[in-house]
Length: 415
Image 1 (cartoon, one colour):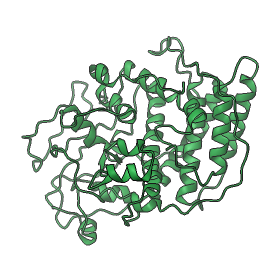
Image 2 (cartoon, helix red, strand yellow; image 1 turned 90 degrees about the vertical axis):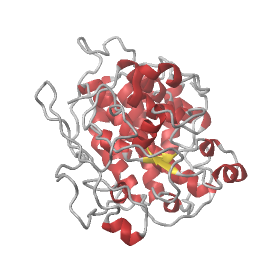
Image 3 (cartoon, rainbow, N blue to C red; image 1 turned 180 degrees about the horizontal axis):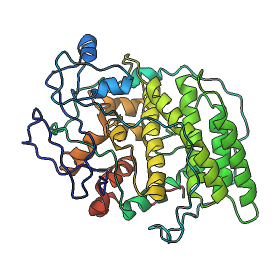
Image 4 (cartoon, rainbow, N blue to C red; image 1 turned 45 degrees about the vertical axis):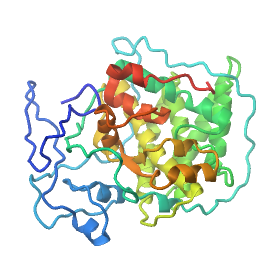
């Protein structure tokens, strides 16, 4: 059964989390997706051995999911859950026109207008710096988020997004290449991330983004040919020996290429991007799996890299899901997205110095929260204050047009 938004049905604090949740059958006669439920066991075996905080649920707790660990409990869970989350597919998707007659998006103009960006990045030879990225990627390195725990509720395996929400996300994501070209940052690429090392995929992504953002009628064909060449070349690389820094750069570059190719409106570019869908998905999952080290260093540079990983993983999956919504009318990665972490304190991302970051990070300002928990807490009024642009991008598909006044995205400076 498809839901109108990614957001789960209304929650009530008094609901008992230790009671089994009952499956229901909708009017269509189709069974609802399998339920994620709490186990009676306080901690799973893996979390107990590591002496880490456990979010007990079946089939696997969030910590085991994030680390790719086998999750087991000493006692049997409340309900036998045999269905797992959707696995990453290795099959490329066929080309389908998403804005043709009969589509709910047939009147949507996928071509945007961006400001002129005059300079291109010349190829440079940089070596990787040994940022301690892994030390910042644990889901459980900090105290619980500062809002009351909500009852765990089943996330839909299949969900719809309303047209307003889809358009908001599309219009903003299409600005990412121009934003990167004019300010070397996006909501998933920190402005200081590549100060001391500049991998080839990021050099290519910057050059392509600048060429695309400054294109005109005379240069558009050349810009798209360069885009196709760079995207194809990157997708053909063997990433099996890449470090986490190299994997991050590869996913970020391919994601920028993907955004241009999928949402530019050029059928050829869309076809090329579709043939790379499974590569972006596989690379994203590998990036996430690499981010599982248990160490807990607390320096600004390492946090920048780690938070860039977290945001890149989330937005990569959202891009693939938004295209699935345009093409098929629904998306299927909601359970995955719900369990992905990001840093709750948006001021840390905007800090311009190590001193400013440290002031905001102490005593416990760098805590992470899972996407699904954040969406529920925000909707229930437990999170107050300004909602940052990246947070709005996460909330829009969950909450929809009902929260338009609070979540509508403002114009960015580099568009």
